[in-house]
Image (cartoon, rainbow, N blue to C red):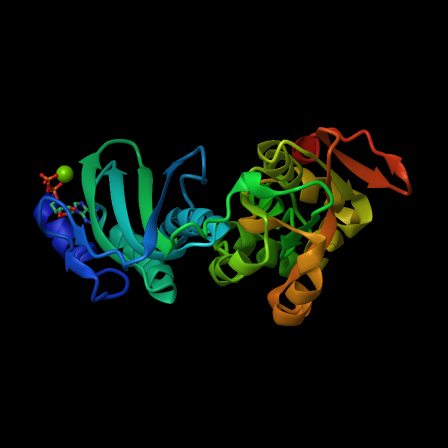
Length: 321
Ligand code: ADP
Ligand code: MG
């Protein structure tokens, strides 16, 4: 690399994100030293983005930085954890300084938003690949896992679904439509909003939670099976954005909302006894979540439309090819 690895790290990655008082040692030593608040458990997740696999090679560099952190923030949100520290393992084909500046800015801005400090990482040469490890914490014993739901718990999802899958299809020129709708959906893919505050708030209400990265149907199914249950989703309750229905029409929009990935919304179960308190303390209009179904003892995930179980194929995505 033209730029030495040391200079690259100093220039682009030291001081990225929030400055936190609980970082005893950050970027620059052999390892980071962090102080976890007493009475807490450490919550850790890591996710890799490979160019050409998880994002188009020519995506804007700032959006790649944003997404690399966002996907991990979403995992911590799904646990109900508060994010705090990140590590960045970066594999780069070359030290392109314009690219690095934009990448670090995209990652840094989202890190600031969530008070996350970049405390270390690794830099190597090779095909573009980004791994972020994110550490956070929560009160001991308070984690929201996938497996805590009971039959009869109500299932909710935050935001709207299918937007990011449509945005990726637009990015790849497999889908077109009015410019305003296209731009909005494209942004939903390039700049996902991890539901960190909602995840933390749900600690007092939800019995189980998962983030929607592989598609609502698949991820609701994972929550259900981790809880040794099945799930019943109501076709007409799946939340859709206006731009998605504008581009695809209602039926295809709902298919994509059930099958498409990369939304990074939260899907969570709430026991019937907690529902009134949930609605009172986290108003649905303010926190943007929708009831989509319920958990049941019968295994398997089904979508019900007008009282009958739908045959659902996972072909929504391929519709654009
Ligand atoms: P080592 O030889 O100990 O692996 P490195 O030269 O890889 O050291 O890294 C030097 C310091 O810079 C370490 O503190 C490491 O955590 C940090 N670092 C390396 N790459 C990155 C990166 N991409 N982002 C943030 N910190 C990094
Ligand atoms: Mg190293």
